[in-house]
Image 1 (cartoon, rainbow, N blue to C red):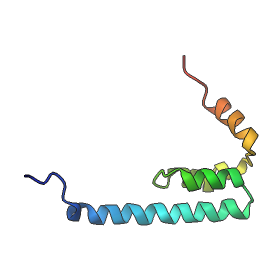
Image 2: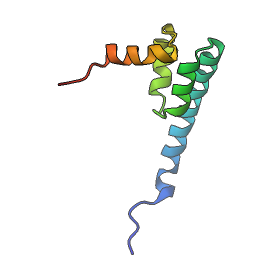
Image 3: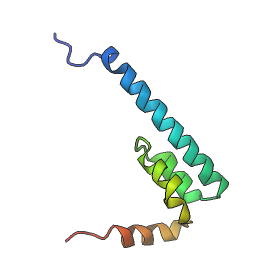
Length: 83
């Protein structure tokens, strides 16, 4: 039976992506907790985006103190449904 994927070939790449993601997630969670942004904290904690959401929060999205009710308004305003 042929082996399609050898994990040892990709272990360096996976390790690098893991370290990258953990660094940005930790930094974003720290900042969200210090700012008492519970909604952002939970979103960053749950969504795994390889650092994209975390970097966006650190440099831009921290300006928006989203309450749980305001989160839906924010999403509908910035991401309207396509018809």
